[in-house]
Length: 170
Length: 170
DNA sequence: AAACTAAGTCAACATGACTGACATAAATAA
DNA sequence: TTATTTATGTCAGTCATGTTGACTTAGTTT
Image (cartoon, rainbow over all chains, first blue to last red; front, side, top):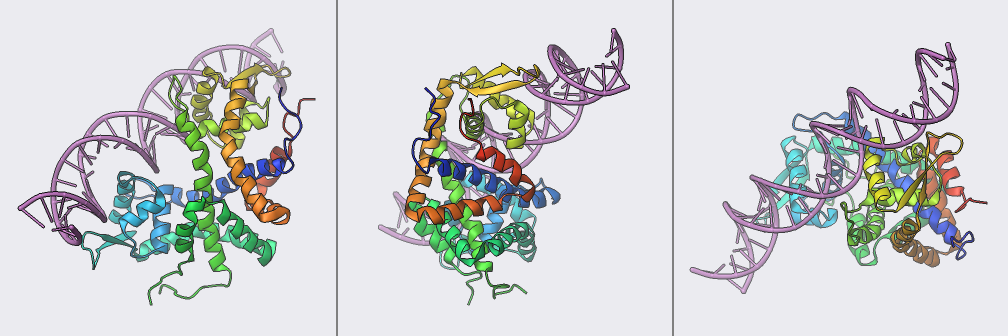
């Protein structure tokens, strides 16, 4: 009773979308993976988890550990190991919160910023090529659809995250 | 010498794209993760790896182990454990290749097909909502850009994979 | 003073990747 | 026919990254 015919019009596009997203994401994360694999650190090597932390701390300088946890949606024990390595190797530094001294505000060091650039360069190049080829209208539309792919109850949080300008210091 | 100003016009969109793709993919895979977590199997539980195998075998009935490996881009040792569980629990069955008897052709059982449906239902619903909201033109454009996000040297292979109709048996 | 909160730590464990070595059977080349 | 290559499977060990649960320390709030 396997149905050879499509159930609804549009089902084929939906199936393609699922597969394309899988392949696109696979190649997208393979870029920084290569950079990470090249970097040989003294205390263990670095992986995707480190990349994500470096990315979000770079984008949100002075963020707290709790904020980082809520973005990554992992446990603090998982984060701890990764964060410890990044601090020990001088990619990230911590600062006591000026208002609430329990908080540890996170910042990239110069070394951390350089690494962040190296990691995101191939990803940026990938999207730059894409957007140049597709043109501004299709590019904006693409971003809008990516946004609508996110869980409805997460969109406000994501919007305030990605909307924030780089280095809000001023 | 951290630059406060944007380097190029369009850089902001590129940065947003990187983050949106992260969040969109995170929520996209969280859907089947819930289904997988609910399923309690006798010999250990099932994870994303099992989902991917079920998906691609479902999409390409009769595919060989080597083909599956080249899609997933993992080692055969990694695949082995996952595949063994799926066969042992009756989601997938193997068949000797009729031309080349060394090959093991992979098929979903009825149980496997049912599970595939349960896993992909929430993902399909997500894209159905998206495409209904965005309209056919933006939807097609979205697929085209997703495709161009894939590594250039992989696109032909992906195209022949996703272009293939379901159940090519006839 | 008591309770709560932010962060860190210790221990044990699960999943899903990896490498390297080796085994078996079938197909192909010498 | 014998030798080699190929498709698949397996054993053993390791690593990265996630989990739960219990507990500590320091600072804030009630």
